Image (cartoon, rainbow, N blue to C red; front, top):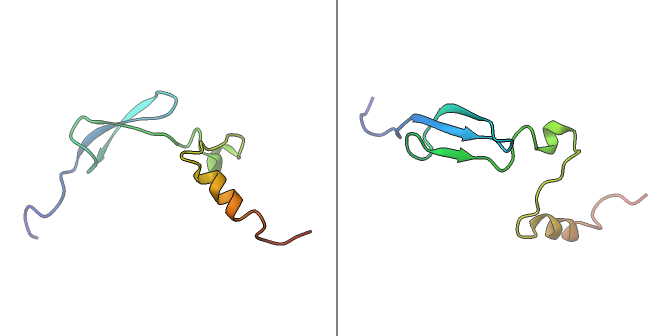
Length: 75
């Protein structure tokens, strides 16, 4: 196997939206960096049953809803 072709694999800290943290190994960032998550299993509608809403960053969700408002079957 060739040497020096693989990215550095090191330990980082991941901070969930509720403030809890855990350590994992990743190629992201530098050793000891903290990755702050905007959406995680405790807040994402796919895991929470849809009770919470995603944040609309830059109007993307509203533009999508406006673009595809009339698309689909009509009752």
